[in-house]
Structure formats: structure tokens, C-alpha cells
Image (tube, each protein chain N blue to C red):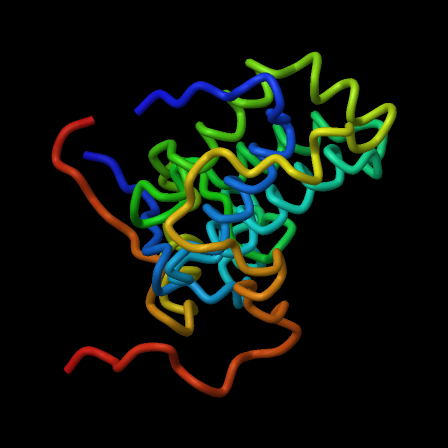
Length: 69
Length: 142
């Protein structure tokens, strides 16, 4: 079981909250849109990732769990 | 689709036209496509005009990596593939333009057919975000 961050590029409006809350995995490009690390999230970052997803003003960022991996 | 360019055309000018057109055709939904393709078109244009900084090709590579697979559809990926392939196929011509500016064929070269003329390279770009937008672009789901 692994958790990954998923971004809806249409909904994202480059607010940049996610990169503030999860700089370990999210950086911003030169226009302020997030660059996600596609690796599964370690347990230690889960809470931060959840908070980053919740803070997204456009609900563009989601935390997804897949069964295998 | 394969189109042969004639001797009297300039492959750099053709690439500039098509890249700018591809940027203008972004549906404006995803930030990396809107901003990235405009920046890509601008950089290709600068190289063609001999006005690019020395690292023009590196800039192209970087923009390409910022655009590919970051849109909801395949348009940005296709546009990047076209541009990178043109830069590779016409590397000598691009290097020549970067050093000496436009060639004699540049001004008249318009061989690759485009459905409609490309708009100026900045018209489709969204204004840079400096603050939290007050207007939503889409209706929230109920």
C-alpha cells in the first residue's frame, strides 16, 4: 500500500500553498505551478502531505492510496 | 504528415511560425502549457532572430522538461516534440541564426500551412499570478 500525491493540472491555479507545506516533495516551477515527486510518500511525510492537499484552495492536489506497492 | 520544405524556405522561420501557432492553440486550462508553450515560442523566436542569450538551447531543453506530461491533454507534449525535433533536425540552421540573426529567406518563408495565422506570442498568455485570484474559472462541483 502506498500513498502518492496527484495533481489535477486543470484545477491548479498556482497558489503555491502545497510547496510551502510540503517542500520535501513539492517545488514550484518558474510560473508557480507545482512539480511533484511521483515516488510513494514515506510515513513520516503523510501528515504533511495530507495537510498540503487540504490546504489547496482549488482542490487540485489529492492524496491517493493504491493497494499494491 | 510529411511536408518537404523548398530550397527557398527557411526551416528556422518555419519552426518559429509553427511553434508560435501551437502556443496560441493552447486551450488555456493548464498553467504549464499556457506559460510553457508561450515561453518556448518566445525562445525559439529569439534564437531565430539572433537575439537569444548564449544558452538558448539549454533554455529550450529546460522549458521542454517543464511542459512535458504536465498538462491534462497531449497538446503540450506534441508541441514540445515538434519543437525539439525541429531543433535537432535543423541544428546547423538554428546555430547559424543564433549567431548571425535572420537569413535572407526568413522574411518570406511561410510554407508549412497553418489553419489560421498565429496570434502575437503573448496574447494567449494569462497574466502572471501575483495574488490569489478572486474569480474562479470553473463552476464548483455540487
